[in-house]
Length: 97
Length: 107
Length: 156
Image (cartoon, rainbow over all chains, first blue to last red; front, side, top):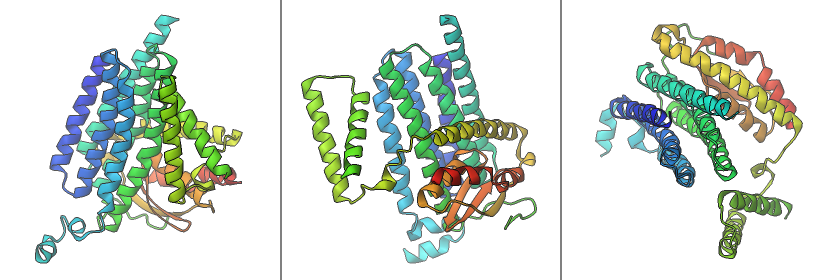
């Protein structure tokens, strides 16, 4: 059952990657990456139990924190010009380059 | 007693996997960014809780259970914050939500 | 000073729970890291009441139980609409005026709304919450003000 749950989470991670690649706007991609990160935490916890090594949980805790920091760090730059116009007006960005 | 706990753990894992897959389908299927956030919300709350609860019932020692509880609490505290930051950044950058029905502003 | 002591105590409990080793070396490393964290947070001037919401009151427990029930119901509903497809959803945006006055109350309220699948807080200005919902019924549910009054009761 643990292995089945791991496979399910791997499938969901694949779906998140598809959305991150397809995603029309930048925020879709950030959302997909965030979801990928939280699913990674679950996957690490599950794999720790599959392999019989619950020490993996420490890594899962650290990964949860790093994931949060990475999302906030990316969003911290959301005020910059290159973020603002990603679908609507690409011309303005080009002009400023 | 042991069989009851292992069946409960199995059910929790099964339900969690199903909810996770539903969230994954939702993130592919929903039409715009703001609706996709709700699909991610499903995988972040109940699905994580169910899978971690299933792991807690696997008969591990107290130390491991405490770590699992800490992971669960972290997930529940961190994800709304990240979602709020993401939604606010998207709204302020001018991404309009898709309102295909009648407008219900100023409810 | 009191808040610093509470922070140190919380950090010590956290360290003891996470590390499973209780040798002298590990405990002294834990002591050193607690001192480091406390000195950094003193330098950042971020040790005060708002950063330590240790209110283990009965009403908070009752609120968490109520919220857990709410989250389970909302999850079932969102999953149902995921499988029903795009025709069944009615995304809507609304501005709601919420009760909580203090910052902590606002944070609890906004986090609870975002944590419940189906509703996401997009913006908070003053007492006005901009909420995006998957279904129009979710907004109507929030407008009844049940969460509002529960959070307001937590504040005092």
